[in-house]
Length: 95
Image 1 (tube, rainbow, N blue to C red):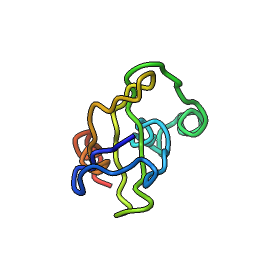
Image 2: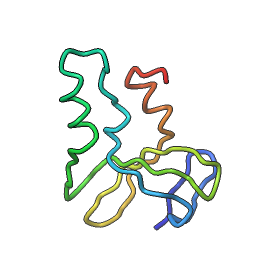
Image 3: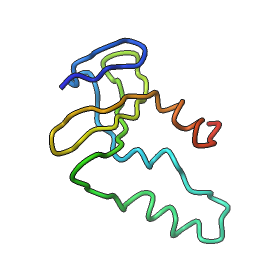
Image 4: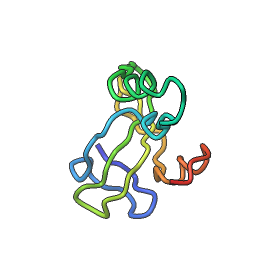
């Protein structure tokens, strides 16, 4: 499977490490009244969808960047690849 890195171009998936659901970018507010419940859900509950899914990938054998890969889990077709920092900024996170 080739991952088209936004900066480096097409790379073999063996250079990357799958890190889970891209929803992990949205960390809960640790000061919220229900912070404990939010962090339990954040840390332990994951969807396992069949179909289009946004995933986090880490470029371990390359520039060590984090990517959000939108991929169809049934066919492995990659629909888009974005830098995770850009996705986080679009969603209102500055760090």
